Image (cartoon, one colour):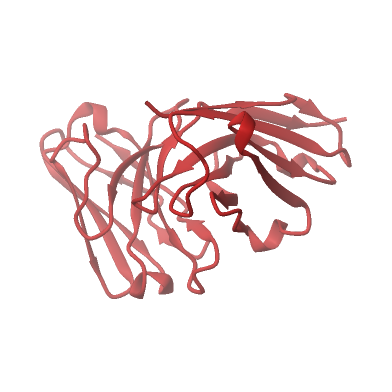
Length: 119
Length: 106
C-alpha cells in the first residue's frame, strides 16, 4: 500500500524560504519509472504542477517557478523535500505530495498541507 | 493554463455528462483525469487511451481526438459531484500541466 504524507510549516512570512517534506512508503524511489511530485492548489483555484523527481534523479520543474524551487530525494529516509525561496502571499496554497507510477500518472496523493504566507 | 476546460457543467441524476479538455500537447500526449471532492485530495479516475484505476466505476470513460480529450460520466450519481481536472505533459514533454478544472453539479 502506497502512502504519502506532507509536513512542514503552516505559516511562513514573505521572503522566507519554505521547506516541505514528503514521507512516503510502499515503494522505493530508485527506478526511473517512478517519481514523487509536488502539486499545489491555492484556495478556490486549480491544481498547479510544481516539481517532480524520478528515481534516477531526473528532475522537472514548473518553468515559471524554476528559479525558486528545488526538489531532492533521500532514498534512505524515503523522503522527498521541496524548497521554495522568496515566499509571497500568492504562494498561499495547499501543497500535495504525489506518487508518479509506471502508468506515467500521479497515482497516489497525500492529504495535502495548507501553507499560508503572511506577515 | 496550457490545458483549457469549461468552468462548470451540470447533469441530472442518472444522465450523461461529458467534460472536455483542450490543448496543443494533447495531439501528442494522452490526458489524465482527476476527481476532487471538496476538502479532499484529487483521485485518479481515468488515464491513457482507455484505462481506469482499480475501484473506479465503469461509468467513467475517456476519449481523445486531435487537441481535445474528454471524460464522460454515463449515469451520473450524486457522489460524482466534484471538480474534475485534466492533466498531461506540456507540448515539449518537459513538465506536467493541469487544466483549470470543471465543476460538475449533479
